[in-house]
Amino acid sequence: MTYDEIFDAQLDTLRAEGNYRRFADLERRRGQFPRALNRDGDSEREVTVWCSNDYLGMGQHPDVVAAMHETLDLSGAGAGGTRNISGTTHAHVELEAELADLHGKEAALLFTSGYVSNWATLGTLASRLPDCLVLSDALNHASMIEGIRHSRAERVIWRHNDLAHLEELLAAQPFERPKIVAFESVYSMDGDIAPIEEICDLAEKYGALTYLDEVHGVGLYGPRGGGVAEERGLMHRIDVIEGTLGKAFGVMGGYIAASASLVDFVRSYASGFIFTTALPPAIAAGARASIAHLKRSGAARAAQRARVAEVRARLDALGIPHIDNESHIIPVMVGDPMKCRFLSDVLLREHGIYIQPINYPTVPKGTERLRITPSPVHTDADVEKLVGALGDLWAQCELNRVPLAAQ
Ligand SMILES: *Cc1c(COP(=O)(O)O)cnc(C)c1O
Image 1 (cartoon, protein in one colour):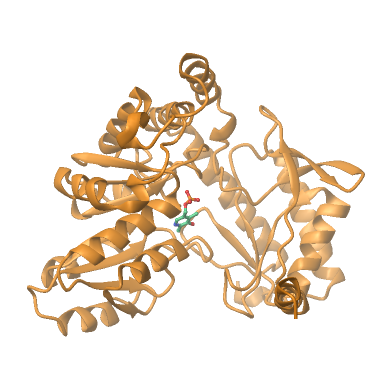
Image 2 (cartoon, protein in one colour; image 1 turned 30 degrees about the horizontal axis):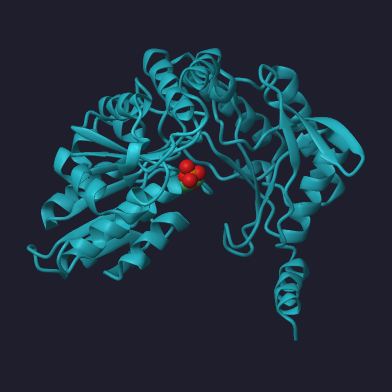
């Protein structure tokens, strides 16, 4: 067997299961999002994107684009080095101050992505706190899991959002032992939200640090877009708030916000922070403009909420099954990888609607879904078209519907 044959055999396994990933080639057009140009071989078509994590369309916001142009013209393309070796530009300093303020923390630290921020921070905290135990929610994101694994600290998994199980695991440990309770606010695939306050109560009772991934919350919840913890008045009870600049903020990058000591510690010890080139200053400036806008204005958040409620109500009227949650994420359940892929293909080809199928390993087998993220940039006509297309497909493919009586 050649190396390529080994690779191909494993890829064939994915194909046979319907889990092989194909990327749609899209060209977003500034000012027209959620419209994008989709190229497939020689064909080109305009599609409407219904699965973006640029939840509010901030990637095309005039303030963001202007800040990026300005800084690009001022400072050029790249940062030119790691943060330690000439890569700390004024744009990075300002962005970190903006982030600390957003979360009401003493300090913040930037990373090249949310993935890297989780991996580097959890890896560093858990490996350097003596005899640290990490208590990790069962549905935590891959980047948290990898960071915890990399730390080689002992870890225990608590059943998703199960407070009794978390307490049982915490109570079994000496109070003095360093512990980290790691969890998310909005879980990206089911769209459910953690009982943050109760988790903080338990962490306090048993002497644990709280580490909250707010990647799907920042920009979207709270009066200034500080996330679900802000909305619930709990930011001061979280030791480490982690977020991304790539989803609701529409740009790129990741960060943590925490006490000055904790941030300085991660800055000084995390290899995933130290040994990599800083984000381009234009990106930092764009992210800062986005955060500043969403701090001042709740209009996009309110419009998003209205769109989400409308799409949910329309799906309910058709009996199309979706997970009922408190967030902005609408997981429409298909439960079969082949059908999920097929639905996504037909939506794109025949209706110009782009919704990426979500299959294993992103979600457990048997829970394959179309994850819909309505945004303020979707119009009434877009909703009409989406709901019409899904209704037709559900009829054609004889997919399960929720019995009307059960709604
Ligand atoms: C997307 C995501 C991340 C990673 O953030 P990026 O900025 O995209 O690297 C981390 N946590 C969760 C829950 C995510 O969904």
